[in-house]
Amino acid sequence: MKGRDGILAIDAGTSSTRAAVVTADGLVSCLQRRALTTHSPRSGVVEQDADQIWQRTLAVCRATLQQADQKGLQVRAIGLSTQRASAVLWDTVSGEPLVPVLAWQDSRHAADLAALAPRWDPCLRLHLGRPTGSRSPYLWAAQLLRSHPRVARAWERGRLGFGSIDTWLLWQLSGRRLLATSATNATACNAYVLDRHAYALDWLEALGFPVALLPALYQDADDYGSSDAGLTGVALPIRACAGDQLAAAIGLGCLEAGQALCQHGTGSFIDVLIGTRAALGGASQSDGSGVVVTARRRDHVSHFALESYCATTGAALNWACQRQHWFPNARCLLALAASVSSSGGVSFIPALAGVQAPLRHSAARAALQGLSLATSRADIAHALVEGIAQTVAASLSANADQAGLPVTQMMSGGTLAGSDLLLQLQADLSGVPTCRTHQSAHASLRGIAYLAGSHGLLWDDLPLACARTRLQAVFQPRIDAAERSRRRSLWQARLYAELEHVRQQNAY
Image 1 (tube, helix red, strand yellow):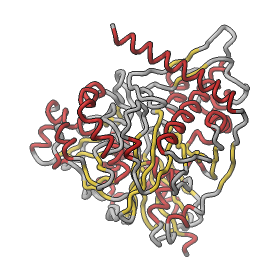
Image 2 (image 1 turned 180 degrees about the vertical axis):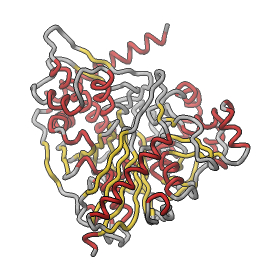
Image 3 (image 1 turned 90 degrees about the vertical axis):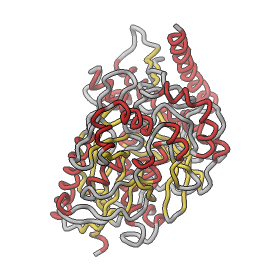
Image 4 (image 1 turned 180 degrees about the horizontal axis):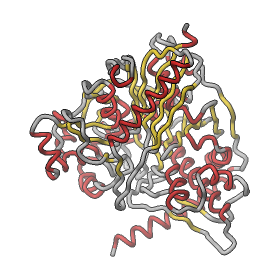
């Protein structure tokens, strides 16, 4: 019976990996989650453990499938959503990761990439929709090929595997048979030619990366073979693989040009959909903003969005709780923040791994400002939440300006979307109504399932699948344009003061 059929949806994020079954009615059930650890041994370096990511992903898949069987659900296929632009190098014979994962917040190669920017940025912006940036999985791998003995030896012996998290998990799930990546993940790694669905070989050559190491390029909705029954207990077709942000867009019902979304997780990503033509002309302007083009591909057609982000929003709340011990946990922080009407003059810039909007600056650092003897913990909590909302508003404005499209509504998903305060602040500071869907924290799980099951498996097409998503709440702006401008200008002035401080430090 189709109503009891479902898709095994996997979402391997940065702070956790999850699995669930999404049934034909669009509901997420049998949810399992395991936390993932992130290490930052020094400033600019952010790493994870590839084996931990795989083992915990496998564990949640097994637990979800067991629960689905107990409930009488028939799982028909797998959809895989992952964090983007993190990279793995491993031995394809032993299956052993050779070095820690390069996490997407990592900026250790920022100076090397900045040296290449004057020559390459115009070309990359035009064809890839993004500049050299502050992180490159390909440069990271190329340098390790020259400097790391185990990586070099595996390459010489023809047993080196390379790819982003989707490549690593697809290889494992398929019984170590498939080396592939999807369009959304390849785009984020910054060597994907948007209008050709192909790698930028000249750029890879400039980085010193061997093209023979590249995983095969697939569409996001594609035939990725089947899972190994020895791992999951049943062989299931893998029918979709996509970056988490684009999976979330589908899960939030965003398919058409002009729709906007904000997905909150470890970082917060803000997208404005622009349709089937990439706005490369706008993205090629060197305006200093962190706006880039992303691509999703299905039925041999690419769909594009303009995106900007803050790498450490959810991570900033975890930092305040787990590293600084200011609050017991993020839930308590959010509740305390909502207990006061303002931050009492305190402001927070969540740039623990650089800033992307309203301009790009990888050396920027977080700042908590405006403290006084009267400042309470609730004021600080409110400032942390408002700092996230300020970055969302700045990102949305930057995206909309480049898109040249009116944005009348922003869908919001992810773990932090459960905070009424955050979504109200987003609406107030952006001037755009902000919407929350039912099960908004599971948008990426729902979206990757829709992508995997919308060729007649569970749904006849993607719009019919997205019609299953239900709206839960709409937050209308409560302040006028003058107050909005005042509050945003004050926050941005403090941001620019922080950037000037960084510039002066670097001058010495």
